[in-house]
Amino acid sequence: MDYRQWTMDYPPLKYYLYSMSQAFMREGEDQWLSDIAPTFQALILFLTKENNGVRVYEKKQSLDANGRTLHEMSNGLSYRRDQNGKWEVV
Image (cartoon, rainbow, N blue to C red; front, side, top):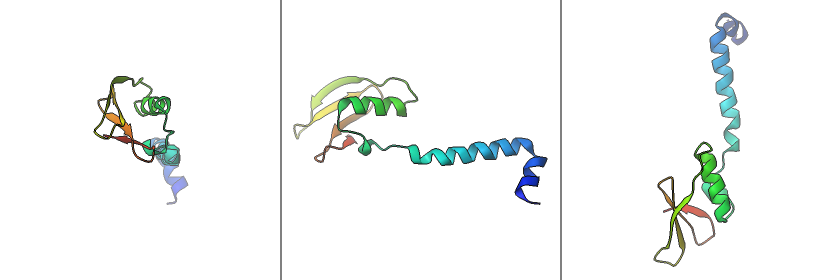
């Protein structure tokens, strides 16, 4: 039995397999924290997108031992830019 005949006999599986294949096709759209621009607004937009559209905001700002700005965010994590200007979780 080939794939087409099999999915015709089991229609719910056809929908499931189609949905799964769509999910895998979108995998390339993901963006990493280190890929975003080194601006605070870009960090906010990235974190909000990662949080399913729920706005992430800055709760506290301080300096770390190296004098870099440390941003404590509403998602419970702290972020700063590394020596290359890329965002990282602290």
